[in-house]
Amino acid sequence: MVSVIADIRVAGPSAVLTQHTLRELPEAEIRIQYQGSSEKAGLVVRECDFDEFESKVETDPSIGSYEHVADFSDVRVYNITAGDVPTLVSEHLASKNIQVLEATSPSGDSNWQLRVRSPSRKNLADVLSECRRGGNSIQLNTLYSETNPPDEANFGCPSMDRLTDDQYDALVAAYESGYFEIPKGTSLAQLSQEFDIGPQAMSERLRRATNRMLESHLQQDVATAEH
Image 1 (tube, helix red, strand yellow):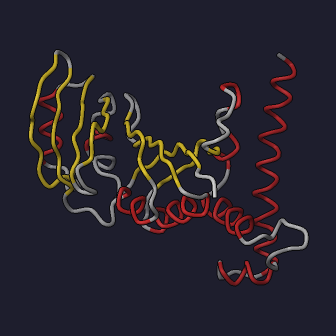
Image 2 (image 1 turned 30 degrees about the vertical axis):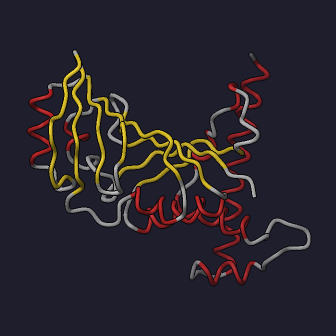
């Protein structure tokens, strides 16, 4: 089984700093320098007033404690420990043997942008579903085989942005269970039972999702051809 690399964007109760500090200081640029455990990490912070950053962190319920450990010109380094947080995104990832390769929150964005390595597409899909069930907003931006990286021009997955969470989950479940294979690995009735909806509603959800994917890719191809 070939591992996959994915870029995901996540915010919510399982993603530290995203619901308070990063919303109030969107100009802050943060990178996770290291992660000692699922609850402890080292942060490199820049592009913000550090005193204000520390003030926000002190009242952020997602942070249990923090320590200012170093200064480098316009950069500060902190150690943090997660506070009152449900299952952390890092814990969800670790439970499926998914490795975080890079974690940043760019200036102007109150989300974490993660590059991860997953042993399979299913492991990644399971984590995305678990995070959404926990009330988090999580979006898959790119996905490719580690042995077959994409061309730079085709790196993004804009069609993913256009799917609702329900549509994405339905497509993943249908793909993983072999619904699109010949012969089919599962039936529409079986899929609908998994999502606790009727077969007609499941069919419409898959058709809408497929239509949005095709529409996005076809529009992108037309735009490329015109240039």
